[in-house]
Image (cartoon, rainbow, N blue to C red; front, top):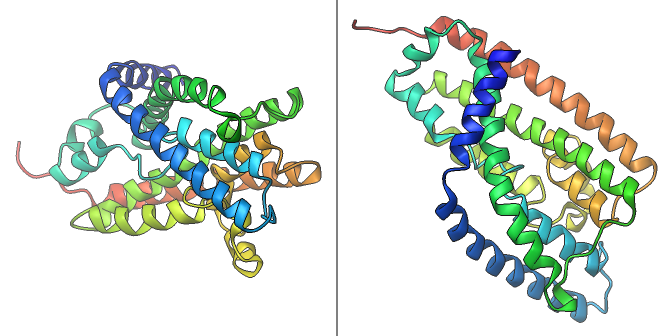
Amino acid sequence: MKKYYYFFKLRFATGLQYRMASVTALTTQLIWGLMECLAYKAIAEASGGNLPMNYSSIVTYIWLKEALLVLCNTWAADNDLFAMITSGNIAYELCRPVSIYSMWLSRTIGARIAEAIMRCIPVLLCAFFMPKAYRMSLPVNGASFLLFLLTLFLALGITVTFCMIVYMLCFFTLSPQGWRMVLTGAVDFLSGNIIPLPFFPKKYLFLVEMSPFAYMQNVPFRIYSGDLAGGEIITCILKQIFWLVTLMFLGIVLWKQAGKRIIIQGG
């Protein structure tokens, strides 16, 4: 385990170096978040406040989504790993006396956490000082905040293990672009990144909740905002654990199959 911790640490330190990119992204996220708040405010006023979520919860959900954008989104995949697969440079990885799956998993987690840390603090500070109608709220209580942290950690695990499956599928195709466009686009919508899942029609929401995507950012953000409470939280945590274990198992199986297909020519 120690060697994988060092892979995590190295990728985490590397991710912290891209400060200017984070500053540029910060401006975009603040403007985009404010635009979303304005849109939902207009919807709330037009509907007389009759929304699937409380308006204050929606605003908090939006700012959490912007602050932790790279933590629970599948589109934030590691381009270096895709390039490694398609260029053949994975040969260098295979020379290491480590598990490819575990090494890539630790690297991916390290990169996401590093980038999220640089972005989330300034975004959250700005969100807490917005005008009242667009201001992010504090968690309902200390227990909700702790549950938010737990479910956020599990959501990160589900997101990364799903991305690992996407990486492994690229071993079976000539180009990774097809898998990336189809899978990440679908997950972006089904995980609540575009609109919160409570806004989905109930008959479709039932189907979405049977997938792992509903247990990515949807769960921790709704717990923090107070939209999820009581027994629903326990159920969601159990489902998060189930999907985390399942996706990790599928990823390892795919890697074992992909490993048998790798042919390296030259010397």
